[in-house]
Length: 429
Image (cartoon, rainbow, N blue to C red):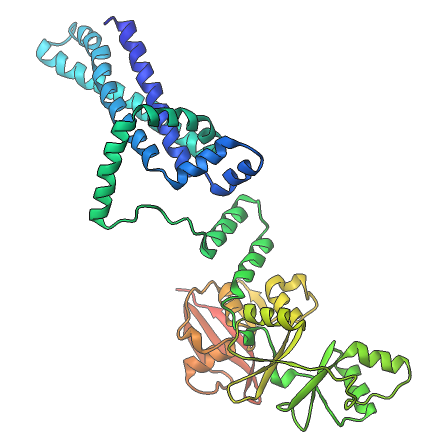
């Protein structure tokens, strides 16, 4: 075989090996969501790629047959292409005992470099950059090779399945998309600029609804504005003026005996019609939704949907009212300042290493701001105040401090056993 013929054969082997590498990496890197969108647009090649991803054994068997066979043939042909000519060139300066092995080494280096660059690095990079486009172009030729090499494919596939069974490995990969997968995609989208940081945070907050307990979003018991059923007209008007809300619980005797709630719109309508405000009027009083304090925010949303309400009172295991929650409270947890930008901030950054935080701030928000992954006994509390109580094993007092995760938490203000303000300082090593 002449030099030109050998060189053409070598280039043909390199091209074939590059094609196999492209086929391998593009199939592995192709994203199912993009392929499904192409299928919806009518591209049958995308459907074939999706089907191959679901059953990839025969496809990758052909890839491995091609990769190994072409690499071996390339080494044999390449050595015969370059080695004699390099040896003849070296013979002008070296003895045959030195020129022949050196020519072999130089030829081996050239062939290896060509295969690394042209059949591995370049095709794999191209396949990673444009996986779906490449996969659509190679899928039909690869299925043709699967048909032509079917006996070998079936034999090696059978051997592979038996080997996997011996190793206890699964026969198919799991395609279930988890919340962690989606959050990882949103983080990558934020880094690439496809998503704004605020949009990523909203998506993360949506998934937190299934883990956040309702006390993390509720209005605390001591902050609830409510009426007693026998409150006179002037007391009701004064309460509405001092604490304007959309809904008010109505209680008999004290807050732990809720009998219903009134909507501020109904009260305003009576005021405009010059009618007296009487809370024992059955046409004015609405049935209140009671939910236990161990529900997640997602479960509260489901209860709102089922009963058609957007307001609920929260009770503990002793049937005592611990707070109230509205649909707006839940949405504020998801959307943050986009829903209620006028709300008082619970976390105020003072400088690069310190924050002033309200004691009732949900502990998940504290973890996010401080970038703390794990807290001790996290199931025992919902707020920063609860964290301090668990860590101190008593009711915190002013100037009490707790150190955790590279931060010092110092109680700055306590009002009737309620922790108002906590100073958090990053500890520098």
